[in-house]
Length: 271
Image (cartoon, rainbow, N blue to C red; front, side, top):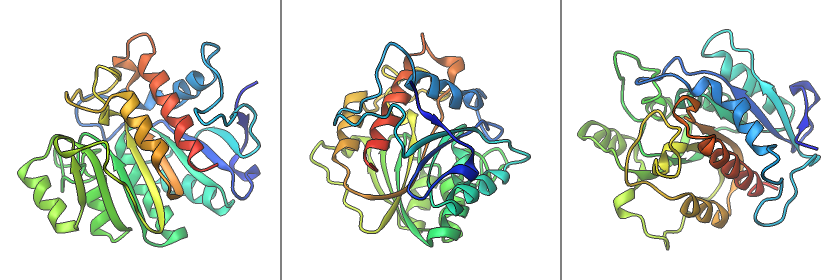
């Protein structure tokens, strides 16, 4: 019982490769997300739940899904190396963070393999700061690096509720399609042509539903609202990440279970 285990060099074309990136060195407020990947997998495999998605796909020992364990990281940019290895096997990388800074090196490898892709970004924050605390690789900056280097064709952000004058100007500079939380309506359609990379920051959720976050930002989505959005997606997904779960702030593993549920439903959108 459980998710299949695999080394990256054993992956096959079309596999969904869950890879942990235990990295939080670019967190600005508090560390903790480096502890998250294995706890998310533990929650997926927890006896209190089951392996079915809500559309009745059984992920238990599913032949296309593999947990590859935590990557061994020599430094920040070895994240790109690990992602490149997954892509070279023909697999779809699903990266479990870790803080949101991991998305930039991942997208460097995605761009090498797929060219410019579209990004769908769930978050309370734009992560478009040019730098934060004199750090251009902060978890507040990955999409500034991605867009200024031309790694993405488009960037669509939903759930934003922390806009500043600087990040507003950055969004305009990079042509970001932004749906702020205050403007969200359930009827909003997320239609994106071409290959899509999904980056899911758990703080898009209100902390009432996900307390295990470094940054508590009131006024976010409920778990059910996020699941409804995911389940309506009809996209050509070529890679994903789920980031910013902080076990140090969690309550009884509540956020781990939410992260596990979202991971399962995102996988469902690929199968």
